[in-house]
Length: 209
Ligand code: ADP
Ligand code: MG
Ligand code: MG
Image (cartoon, rainbow, N blue to C red; front, side):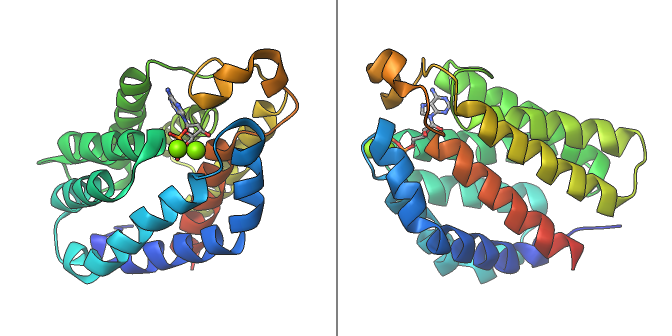
């Protein structure tokens, strides 16, 4: 199965709609242990991507990821802006001159998440978006390599993302603004992990259809 950048406008639309639908809940999460602007940061980035989405859809994957990364970097302030920009720009590098198939995407995706870890000097278990992106990237790559059916892979990825979000609840935050709260960061889900999960659910439902 080939998945082309032609689906990008639909992906952005689906992401926009789920983020808007959950805006109040996301704000509450970031208010509890951050500064409350996470949904606003994402919405600015999504709006900027929507303005370029038909143009991005005409590119090859590597160029599309590059354009997405640059757009996100210019539009989003805050920690999430530079981290998502890093993810997409790294995806661009890793997919350059590679075949446009699931195998090479899965490989590139793991390396791009690795770049986000380095950018934020963070890892799994620190109550961030990485608690979703890392296990999701690994599960996706393992399933693709094992030759599982796409529908099963997508379902598995969603389950892993849900577990990643829930795992952040009892973690002690050691990176980002939430780390300023120390022990008081415990008992709250991380906003960035939650929005990563919402985006993954939206992306998988578009690909499934
Ligand atoms: P800011 O914290 O600058 O206000 P956002 O509110 O947009 O930015 O994003 C906050 C989210 O970014 C957090 O919920 C967390 O998931 C993620 N985050 C913060 N710091 C890091 C980091 N060093 N590595 C990975 N993710 C991080
Ligand atoms: Mg914030
Ligand atoms: Mg902020």
